[in-house]
Length: 443
Image (cartoon, rainbow, N blue to C red; front, side):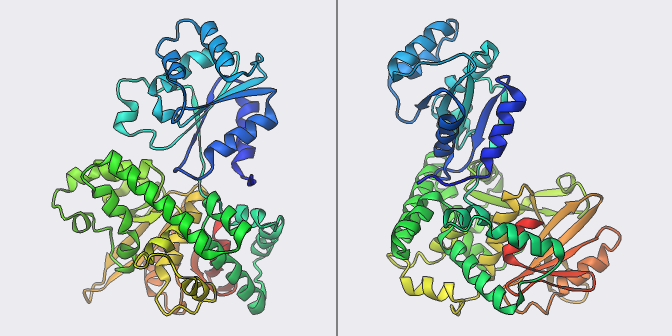
C-alpha cells in the first residue's frame, strides 16, 4: 500500500532544477516512509535504479565506498551485485539509511561531480556524533524533510481526495461549516489524531479497521524509538525525556522540566542529548521567545523549551501506556469526545505537529502577572511579514482567552492576526479569529 505524499512534488522540482548537480537528502524520523517514497519516485521517474539499504547490505557494497578513486569500477560492481543496468542521466542510486555508512555519504561529493547518475539519500539520526565522525559532510546535498502523514495526506489515504481542498476554500472565504458540519469534521479529525500519520499505523487501520491492532503497531514504533535513544544515549536520559512528554504537557509547565525527568542537576550534560533527540525528528521543540518579534531565532532561549511528539497518534498511545494495550473503549471515547480527562495537551501536540509540517519553527511566550504569581502563556507564535501572529490552543472553555488578550495589548504594535485554535466552527470576533483545529495547516 503506497500512500500519496506531498514531498513527491518537491522531489520532482529537485530533479528538474538541479539536473544531477545536487544529491537529494530526505530526512525524517524512522518509519515515516522515507524508503518507500524514494523507491516509488525512482520507479516512476527513472529508467532504472539501484537501492542500497546500508542497514542490511553486503559487506562488499560498504567497502566500495572506502576508496572512490575508480568510479567506473564502483558502478560496474554495483550493477553486478544488484543485477541492474544503469543508464547515464536516466538512472538514480538510492542510499537508504545512509547514516549507517558514513563513507558513502562522504562519497556523494565525488559521485555528484562525476555527473552520470542522480542520487537520493534517506536517513534518520543523520548528525549524531558517531554517524559523522571522521567524515566530511558533502555540501552537494539538497535536503527535504518528510514528516508523518498530515491531515490532507491522511484523507488521501482514506480515499477522500478533494476533502481538504474544500476545507481550504471555506478558510479562504472566511466561512465555517456550520455546527453540524463542524461536528462531523471534528469526528474525522479526531480519528486522525488517534491513528496518527505513521504510514504503518494508517495502513493497519485501512486493512483491519481495528484500533487495537493500530495501537500495537504504534507501540512497536515507540519501542523502536526507545531503542534508538538508548543507542545514542546509554545514560537513558533521552529515553526518559521521550516517554515523559505527555506528562510534562499535562503538568502545564512553562517549560520542559528536563532535570526533574532525568533526576540530574547537570543541564549542560543534557543539552547535547536534547539536540540529538531533535535531530532524530521524533520530537518537535518549541523554544521560548524572550523578545517576541519577527526573527524569533535571534531572541530564543535554548534552555527554555517545550517538547512535543512528531506524531499525535504516538502521543496518545504513550499517554495511555498504563495498560498492556490501549483498550478500544478509550479510543471510542476519544473519538466521540466523551473522555473525561482534559485533552487540551493532545490538541496542543497536534497543533505543534501541523505547524511544523507546514514549515513553521515553533516558539511560545510566557510572562508573569504584575499582581499575582500567575504566569500567562501564549502557546505558539508565527511570523508573517513584519508582524507576529499569536495562537492560543483550546480544547474547551474557549471564551476565556486572557493570556492572548494581554499579549496583544502588551505587543500591540507587533501583532496583526490573532487566533484561537479550538474544536468549534470557524468564526471571527473583531480582530480575533476562532479557527477549528483541522484548519491549522492553512496558517
